[in-house]
Image 1 (cartoon, rainbow, N blue to C red):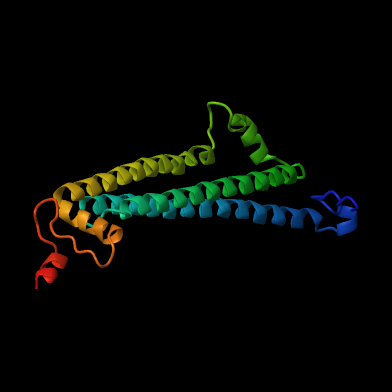
Image 2: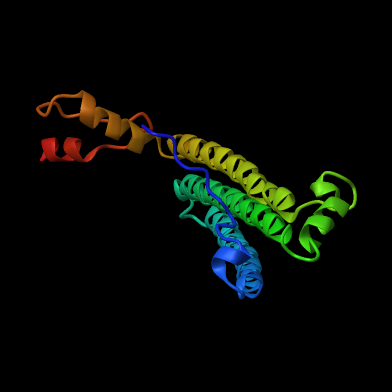
Length: 209
């Protein structure tokens, strides 16, 4: 396969484009800066929405754990929360990469402008590596990671509670558990008579009749 041509940012000069070259280039620059700002606004909106979803899931887990209908829901809710948080992390990473590319293009466009304001600002901020400025995207990506850790802990608690509730039911209702086991182990023609606790089963009563 032939090599793809290297993309060129500025495809014309003033001589090949015309007298409106600089004016049109400046208009394109303004539109592109506005599109980069809209990407940041969309990222903030997505963060607010997903933060609300995660807060709802945590509150739902708390209400289910306190009710008698918890059981398996206290496991399913953390699984859903982990999936939402992973999606959130991917969205943050995607927006960050897209904005990085956009500002690289803005810096290249500013080489044709009287003043390279964004490039100068980025150099003064030590490209986000110093103490003067820390990019927001580097900080906000920790929020879904924290939620993932919380959901994993809640899921473990939910599994332990389900196991404990099963053991508690077996201790409180041994006849019910034994009857269920007998139903699958004995043949259809056999009639169990008495459970371990001394209660008579329904099949025993039918046999006496």
